[in-house]
Image 1: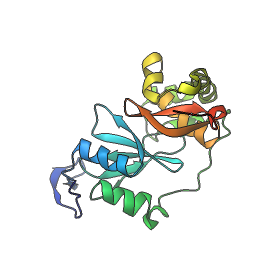
Image 2 (image 1 turned 135 degrees about the vertical axis):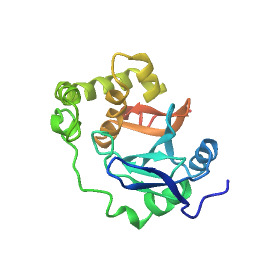
Image 3 (image 1 turned 90 degrees about the vertical axis):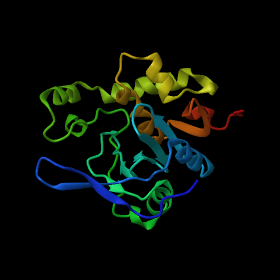
Length: 215
């Protein structure tokens, strides 16, 4: 894989405020990016339908847009990030940011709410969100969903489950309602990842299987 080492800013558009917007293109294919992350031992989910990967590193989760090098860190509620940053490509994203000193000003000291207490509704929607989003945020029983997702993972036994499998088997919930919970459960020490994948999605297991023989 030929990694992109320099920014190549090109005119993209003029926004509603009259500001000229430029875009950098990495010219790195999805398969090359996945192969690189696999070789580096970095876990990720391929977000089908978007030019984005959800990257897991340490105790954090990131958006990475492989066509432009844009990336952002999710907060503990897995809200859509407000602040995005730019890398030249996937190698730059991993080495200069995730593994580098440049993360010091990005990683915050935010603390997670108690695992099985409901998250404050104001943290589940953006400032200026539509009324429907605000109403939905106030109706999301985050504590119940954490317990529910943990029960699904427990029922999966030693085989474990994945976010894709849980979303497919429980379509009554939005994708983000389920996908946000494993990150929180991992931080609370209730689940773990052994590194194996199914359908390019990380397998999640209950912590009680931590010392089991997984083959």
